[in-house]
Image 1 (spheres, helix red, strand yellow):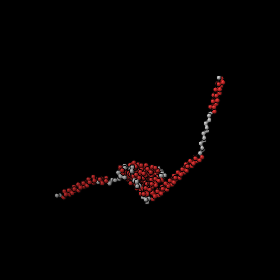
Image 2 (image 1 turned 180 degrees about the horizontal axis):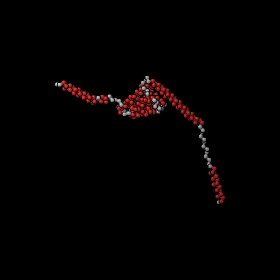
Image 3 (image 1 turned 135 degrees about the vertical axis):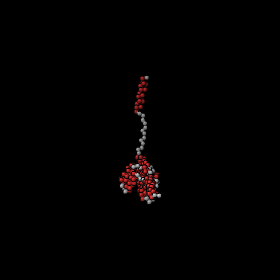
Image 4 (image 1 turned 45 degrees about the vertical axis):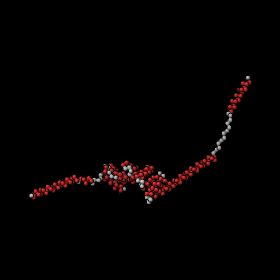
Length: 260
């Protein structure tokens, strides 16, 4: 076989192999590339926000979370990233003492994640800071429906009941927290404070009751000792006009008799 023919066969084989490799590169390469594409704009903004939050750059973190929410959230809805955005943004707003905006953000998250413990807990905290104690109590009760062993929720619930003047209920809430963790210093201090307030409230109630009772008894005694006796009714008398009428009647009779 001529040498040039052999060389031509080798070249043809090489070209054929290169063509096959090229086809493999065109059709196979995009597959792993698509498989590695695990992030998008929303995810990128979320990650930026998390890093800023860890650095306590709360205002910048909020901007990043807002950018994530303004992006296409299709991918982050498939994971917990969207939930974390609402949680973390609400937390950042609380750190900035912007409690009203925090409640608004947390409510937006609760529309989607109705039974998320952290969203309800942070909402309760924000409401407490605004002095909306009954609403805060409702939020903490919701947390405990989701997780009845939430130590922070029980302690904060105790604080809320204390502010409402419901001291014995506060004692019960702190006691539950103390049962979960007997070494928890916060629940120990809260329990002592609530018990003291409950005792003082009971004593005050007792004193007020005694004062009311003394006043009532004194009023009865005064009425018995100093009331005026009832006046006797005077005997009824015949009206004077009636006598005159009888007299005139008699005079008429006598006159008539004289004529006869």
